[in-house]
Length: 86
Image: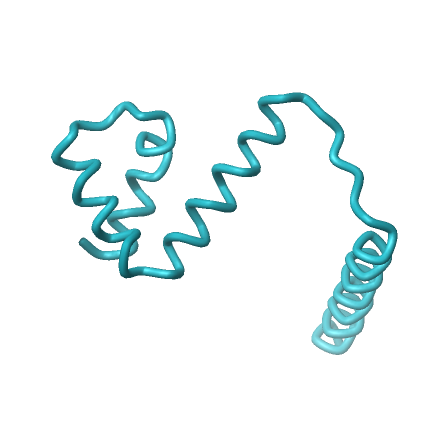
């Protein structure tokens, strides 16, 4: 199984609406593919957070780092766009 195939089945995998045979194939893929395991785990945790409707407070230092990273990316994008418009 390739990563693209795994990603196509991810929603059904997490919902538990796939056959046992396909589940076994996906589990095997997750066993050796670190990237898909991270995607699956992150997606699963995100769904759980939203399903519980609980507000998850980020630690202040993480919130600040994320804000800084977003602002830097936005500033970089604006600069790139202005340069390409000339």
